[in-house]
Image 1 (cartoon, rainbow, N blue to C red):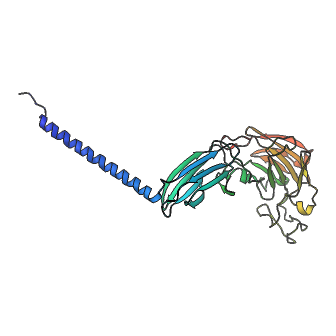
Image 2 (cartoon, rainbow, N blue to C red):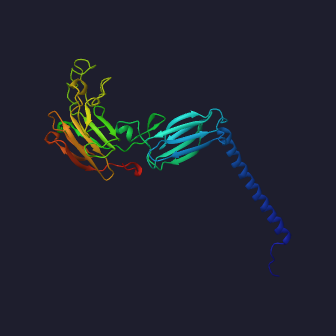
Length: 326
């Protein structure tokens, strides 16, 4: 007698059992997922909000939140830029947020946080560079963003990289022009020394490493006070702020006395950054220190006292943030 297959009756019973098992597994999975989702929703109550983000070129990035009065207790919104939290607040009504100093590629996230649980609500990649009006130094221009008037560091790179070796003294090393003893300001509304805006004007000091600087003639500085590059300027002193003027499109030393300009009245630069190449103009210098000027690792000026001013120098390009161009 030949082999026979499973009887029709047994086959039907077996098939029915498999179907029941699959239904049970599917039901367990659906219930499990649903309970987890419902639990998250109960914690965060994010169903009653709406976000509108506007990113027009050279304007603030605006984030408008609407209708989140019913959010769960102890739940807060977190605004994150490039994975760095810059603002936390309770959602109780409409809210408008303005953000400056963002570049293409920067990531803006809106997160709901309750205890240890977080929910990503919005994830926006900046397409257009925003305006940036709240800065007058490299630190604020590049690593920081401005959220409703408050500055937050949101990136670690994008220094312009200009530095000075005072008196060519390699033992001191390169002092970044981000140092507080130098004065740096962005000019966006006029051409300076033939360079189209935006340009940086820089008043650099060359001698804070000397033990007798600033001099006793400075206002509000105790007699005999001594400062170094690592020290913050004395309270009330903004080095270089009163030492310059722009006349007939030229950047130069102002007419103020040494009491308001020392110790930062030694080197006057105009810097036009570019992604591929940049331009540095030494417009004026005083003193006798033979300073070296670097852009990154490249020496741009060897001994500032040997330069007949004004003189223009071609310099390397600076890193442009996420495709941003000047």
